[in-house]
Amino acid sequence: MVKNDPARVTMKDVAARAGVSQSTVSFVLNGLEYMRISGETRRRVLEAVSDLGYRPRAAGRPPKAVGHGVIGLMFDEVATSPFAAISIEGAQEEAWKQDVIVEVVMTGGRRDYETAVLRKWARDRVEGVIYASILTRRATPPDALAGHRAVLLNCYDKDARFPSVVPAERRGGEAATAALLAAGHRRIAFISGEPWMEASEQRLEGHLRALRDAGIAVDPSLIAEGNFLPSGGRAATLQLMAGPQRPDAIFCANDLMAIGCYEALKELGERISGTIAVMGYDDQEVAQHLSPPLSSVMLPHREMGQWAVTALLDSNPLQPSQIRMECPFVPRESHLQRRKSG
Image (cartoon, rainbow, N blue to C red):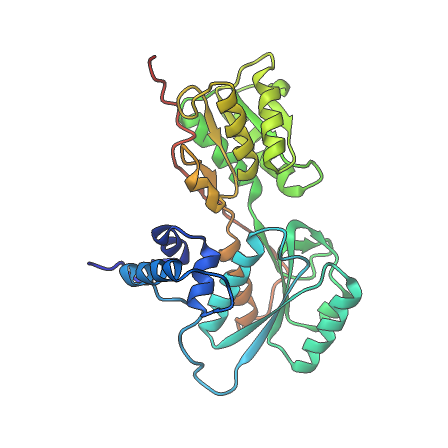
């Protein structure tokens, strides 16, 4: 079998080949025997690694020297979303290229705990600190962070004291709606997430901007509020389909709501990519396994983690600027409307 270029093969590719999650691949490759993973699953993962020529980027080679640097990565939460783990993996991969270890802590957002960890890292003379948030938001880092070479990941500070990186959510929302418009849809509904979340607000702003640029008037009846969960997507879809204007496409502000949207449309006898189109956002692993596979927009959390490490380890002084990283559109089938007879 001809193997792929190892530099281009990702853990996601291995997971898809083996039919497992990326977490399972990570557990197998890191030799975590205490995880309850069957021998058959381990065999499939290792076969996929061999077939694809995958080479883990964050492990598998010893440091060049006995001593090595350390970067501190501080998250407020890690268990409530898959994206924290992706950011951590990206940071680890990039740091290990320079024989630097990433030390991760989860603080629960407790200011006293954050301060204690930062003081400990100051004593340890870490190379720098990544201060990260599970939600894209304006943050107020503890004063002790100013004593470190630091960058902010998926958040920013109101005083712009630190470099920061966040997703370009408006441009992502715009790209998703532009793809629906390019597929011929004109009555495009939007299901938002919880309105207090910046990501929800900015994805809606991008959607509205794309409509305006196409010369399409915004119809308030085609905008419904969801909750970033399948239940919200289902309820909002039923509301939209019973409204005065039947949409020919529904843009869900995340993939979990798109799952609920699929359920509601199928209950109503609709054919996704047949009689109506659906768009998701954030490109979670489930998107490719829906029927039909869900078109979505990828959040660049791995690339953001890599950027944070690169910025910290760069020899140049840090500049207090904000990077908005592109959220690429991932085309599959659900945004296309192929009408069938019968």
